[in-house]
Length: 253
Image 1 (cartoon, rainbow, N blue to C red):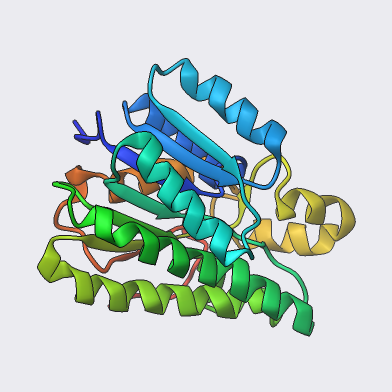
Image 2 (image 1 turned 90 degrees about the vertical axis):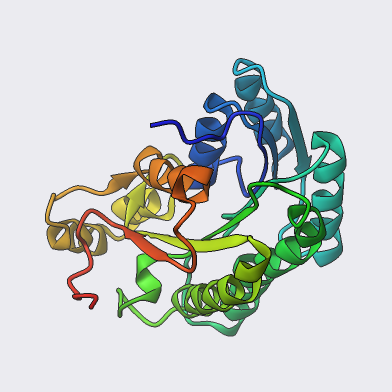
């Protein structure tokens, strides 16, 4: 199936590691010009080298997700470097943590507000696109109780609700907004990699609840994300897609 992505210009927040990084690589392979951001300069350089092999344009910057002005400036710089923007993917996340107050502030600023600020800055240019699309990365943990009360789960739930509201607001302008929520996913440097070592009982319990008895990979999540963001998913708007290998047991009517 042709996803009709070749030549489109895409900005992906948090594209230097994990699921965001896998999304960047797949989009580049599909012929998209790519802009991304992350905290570590060496990771930006590594992505630049990888994307260069696909022969597409690339723009990368180091950005602290809590810095609203820096996030907005990155979007502006990306639009200028790519010569426009067709797709915005918000995948930047602070990850999980405890229920301590500092995690609430961290997840609010990084998971929620980086997406809100990025979308706000991207919208004027997306309105000029022939194939405008916004994809928000949520989490399965926002849809049901999971492990323990955490700011990450609750803030992601707010992000999912916001994406649905946004889809209704922007649909008359032809801008699609969808949300994709991964289940437990293993990749180098992930929280689950740390949990497997430091809190093996929690890790083993999560795997036991997974019908396939394994965690997903970043590449498996990215394939669904790239489709949902692409023009091939033209009739998908306001969707919330769980990509969790059947981890969630709830029935959606």
